[in-house]
Length: 343
Ligand code: SAH
Ligand code: SF4
Image 1 (tube, protein in one colour):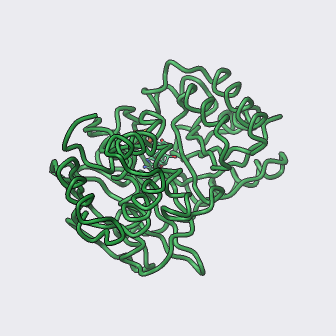
Image 2 (cartoon, rainbow, N blue to C red; image 1 turned 135 degrees about the horizontal axis):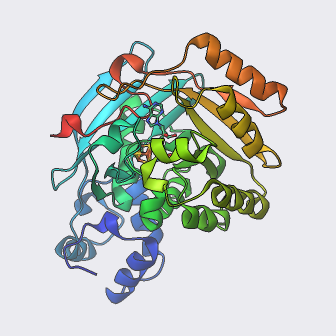
């Protein structure tokens, strides 16, 4: 492990190794995790239940960075969008969505994204870099501090593909879940993936009850290939197989996200293919009226067509919801998060 690495890039196993190399007892790990993630310490100096000598040694070995707030926008509906900058200048966005008795944070797992989905503002700019464990957790904690409220739900639906950065994302989710970290219930932690099969299979076997959502967007191969070029190599039958493995192994259902794009995936043929895909799969369909992304020519179907699509799924016995847009006046809806402010 690098000397002078940021301490929040380490997973708990590596941190435990570092502490034992420094001659510390094993309970130090929990103390440190509480300081770093539970309380969000910005310096080693404030970790007052550690000896001054040990704090100095930590400071000599590691750095401890906290993202800085570059921009914050508040929507008429209370949704807040944040732009954070890390020590190396890379920036990402997160969104805080308040609702009665709930605060949901949508956080980023990568700066940019390599998948290039044609309807996604993040995909347009390509991948900048993966985020580190602490960079994901800090987004959630800082939003919580800004609202002055506990976060009840988190969704990895900001910038980036969580399963392209699997290990860091999983460790971040675990620390969000841990009582020493953010103490958020596992069932209230959701990962959305474009469908990387090995990630789905690994996720199925994780012991926590985290929730999985898949960006399906079309159950017609050529339409999906066109909308989501980054996952062109994975066929729909192989994706369905991985999803069945997930539901059977975990005993949990999967959410299928379907961004409705006018004239692309809202035809009757697409609807029939979607109904066919869900048959025998323990799932829920979440229809998302697509947020138009400037320069792409992509628009959403009429409200009437969206309703019709939802009703026909319902009649076929498929549990369906239509996502209500939050924060639209500040471009804080899913898929609106881009690198553009960062440049
Ligand atoms: N990379 C992951 C998670 C981040 S994207 C994934 O693709 O699942 C989070 C969600 O926003 C995905 O379902 C994604 O397809 C959706 N999304 C992206 N652009 C969108 C847009 N313009 N309108 C509506 N949803 C969009
Ligand atoms: Fe990446 Fe998800 Fe956007 Fe596709 S929709 S480009 S996978 S962030």
